[in-house]
Image (tube, rainbow, N blue to C red; front, side, top):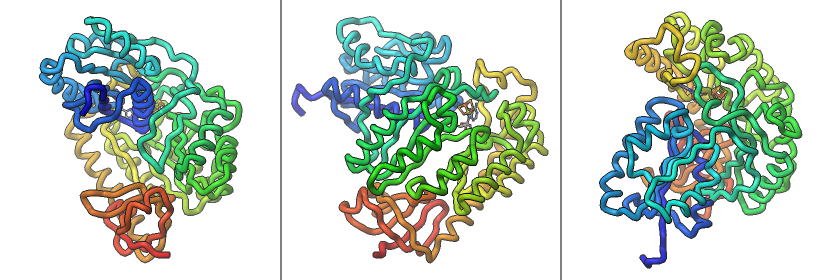
Length: 441
Ligand code: 5AD
Ligand code: SF4
């Protein structure tokens, strides 16, 4: 390793938005001349891109930052930066600074784009650089992310959230909804397709409110415009709030083969009482109606969801309502969470916080149900041929892997030349969420 070489290592917590934010951070670091390194111990700069959506994400970050204390003592020139959602919470930057005085840079979600300046500033001084921009600025249109997931690429189309679900901290740390200009999103998509990316995922907390977030077209219009770009590629999007799901969106999915027949539509609960307390602005019947509309246009559409158990005041009956709704919809998979109390949110002040053992029992029952639905879906694949976009090689299994249009992971024998191409596999075994198959012409 030559002296001139400098390396970065990024630790990412949380959602896909954060994964893409880390690509933006990587883009900035590479402009400064750093290259990525897997071994954190050899990095010249380590960035923790944090998440605060649940307490365990925060605890995870605390643990990992704490573990760097010794390393930093041995390598004083190493720069440690902590950014993202955790420091963006009111008062949290000070807590982090006190707990980890050896951290060099602390920055929030709204000033992520200035990390380059902070690194330069820090190199000339001893004191930590701590900057949290309280309010969101204009959307960034000129990012140069260093994409790390070929043949998949993520495109941020909007930032922030206006929904204030009563349990959720996102609107407090990501600010209000603001959309990018459609022409810039379309140009970015076109250039990614030109570079050979085969799957584009449009990202936002709530992509269906692209227009109400200041976008110049509706979300289905944006999807159609991107789908019209020449070339073979897939188009996905996440996340959609059920209250903004429209018939126009269902028609766009049905009418454009490039838009994958799958949607992530978080329902959170099946109890109307809890949905109201969560401030979700729909009932379980409203949700089911939307699913009916979707399936009228796209009968084979895979629907995935997010579910929370143990929200304050959740009775056993409320929980049964959730189980019933999950069965009725027949989700092809779901992310399940135990409610986590977040200071500053409306739900944190609600009476009836649920004891841990009750939440644990509920989540186990829910996970069991979700897994059985997933297995049912996977079993239907056996004997079928499906088109997989090969993403890479799985060392553990010694097989190549990729997803089909519905988001199911397929594994098969092959070689590196398949990475980034569409491969037909005949499924001969279904294993939970994984499909095992062999390539066919
Ligand atoms: N506790 C548990 N889960 C939460 N989510 C958001 N906030 C909380 C919380 N306080 C979940 C929701 C959301 C997903 C991204 O995270 O299900 O859809
Ligand atoms: Fe959080 Fe609700 Fe916004 Fe999703 S829609 S980010 S759950 S406030």
